[in-house]
Image (cartoon, rainbow, N blue to C red):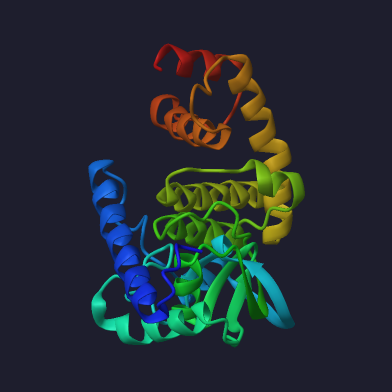
Length: 279
């Protein structure tokens, strides 16, 4: 807890001013580092779960959660930054009232949060979270409701990451990979998931034409990964064509180049050699 002068009201005022200074300095530092504009923005709960796809939810009851796991808000994204420092003076009166109560040792009701993976989003209690951060606390009591999603929340740091998650979720609905395959197919550019989805669906259509039978999406995804993706990635590794990209990015590039330059859907050593000469 910051230094206590013995005057709770004065200390609470200093707490608020200190939190505001840190918020302003944080914005300045992010600008100097040329970080994305959304790095310090509180993550919006509804955008996160929409990007990940909701399967259901369950109440977990009262838990002690880490303050640094609280990264977002259900409806108060403008009043506080990512670390729940106040972004303006409009929350000052209520903030300082709660800080005074906290410094006096008065009981503070638990907050209410949604849990998505390891992340928490505040439904009720934004000011309490902000004050707890300012006072240097590590834990806070919360009533937790867990939200189960189609795509894991791992890797979300700021709002821009939601675009990648959203396109990956849509891709996996079109190409329902599972297990090892699901983890192996990774792209950095969210738009590439749309391109890869189109590519796999076209591959599946040609497969059904060749076999004269209908195949559902699960079967197409499984066979594409085993019969197309893995063998091709293996050849790319041997030919040193992966480089500093992900294996999926390398696959997507050579798949497009193969048809553009050679007008073929086949894969063999001659195709790889031709692509390597045009790298």
